[in-house]
Length: 142
Image (cartoon, rainbow, N blue to C red):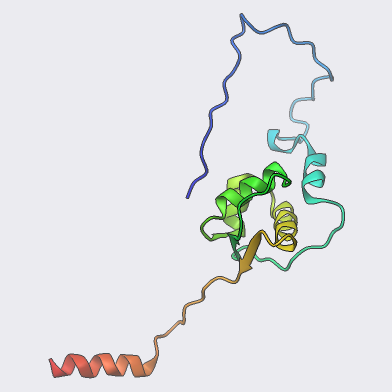
């Protein structure tokens, strides 16, 4: 399941008012890429309490309820994506947030009982021996 894609519209230069820079331009190759220009934004998303649920990259997250109006936009987007079970790694990729911020968001939603975290389904490495014998005997009778 992929999230809906939106294309940003750029204002036409002939209609846009002249832009006055509010801050000096960043030096080129200053070590900042475009995704990391607002480090304080992740702090706002993740909160300050520091309590985190024990989540792994493959832990499945499922929404238990629709997004109430009191949740943040990131949490609302996470709840929309989690109608079907998705792993924390997939959610992190879809929302373009680091794993640490995702664990903070998911922890808040777990405590509000809006999502449920489940361990992934682990299949056995080898099938049950009695099942294989029953299949073998059934094939021999044919």
